[in-house]
Image (cartoon, rainbow, N blue to C red; front, side, top):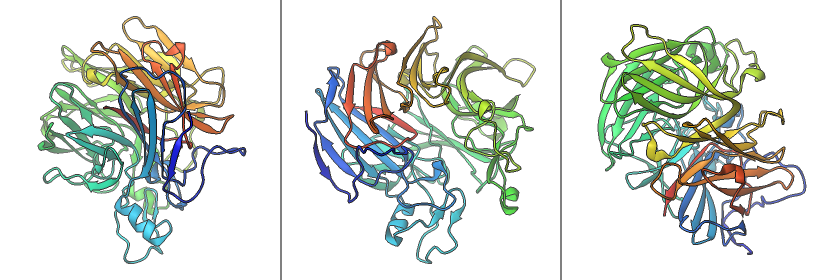
Length: 471
């Protein structure tokens, strides 16, 4: 089936013969219908997969992967047909730079010295996650409020307003599947590289219903957190922030393994006086699979690094790549014990990232989980496959891409009411063909391979997160 493509950009970026760096941005915003499909798309799979990631509009001095302008990629699936569109998120930063015709900001470091006087100071990029809540599609990154975009056309509407709420807002809020509440936190709540943390809840109608602040033991990049029916868990880990370090010409965020991991636990409606701090060895977690309660214990399945990638040590020296792989690990917190230490148990020796569950089980004990995995024999540390973990039996079910191919985060789309009954969708980079494809798997039989492969009209650069919105 031949795609019908409407080009709304100017520069061509499609399948080419020369080698492409898939971290590089694409330069076109396009719309394409009736995409070619190998295999057969499942009946009843109707909705939109939204993915988002960094896609710099202009080359950026002192660039960091985390700092690129957000671009949304939308895949509409309906009755065996697939369409695609992509759009930049028009944040204030994007609009100012578009007007200037060049970059005006550095990643993590504010405006460039020669930025024009008329340009603003808002450096938000809305590039990390995209979720549906209270009738709104929200593009997220952790230093600014959510940005609303239109579901069909993916056009930018602007920052959301939740009463008096301002400042940083996590890219990984948690939706309570029972109440529809959106639980959130924000670090750097007292300004850049400060230990202030804000937390709160937004109800199913988009109203702010709880808000509190507390001080972390030290400033930290807190990318994700955990929520159960009664508790919030805020991981303060030694990827530290330091204004003093910046003033001396050092990195704003850096690894300080001399500091312990500190996990703050408090009631969902609690405040600063309710936080209990649990301590463990230095480690880092970008992403959480899930957390749940078991009597007086809280258990959390998370992807743990011995040290984080992409950031230097505090003295500016590079990290150790052999320690910069994440492994699925279970943390256990005993709220009734006299000690304030938590236990850690590695669940599998397959490195990976981007863990997901059937989100209908968010905050309660789950059986099925998925993550993007690294093949041990390839030895390149790339995310080469998709792993399904059955927590009840311990069985592992993996699909491995050819060497050189790389997968994005696996996203679950439900089919029936039973946990794990549904589909896994993942955008993959095909190194040999220099193109991107969308793969659809039976979620509980990943090793059987994709039931359908969608050929995409242009590559999708490596990004961060996505979610399925049923149609």
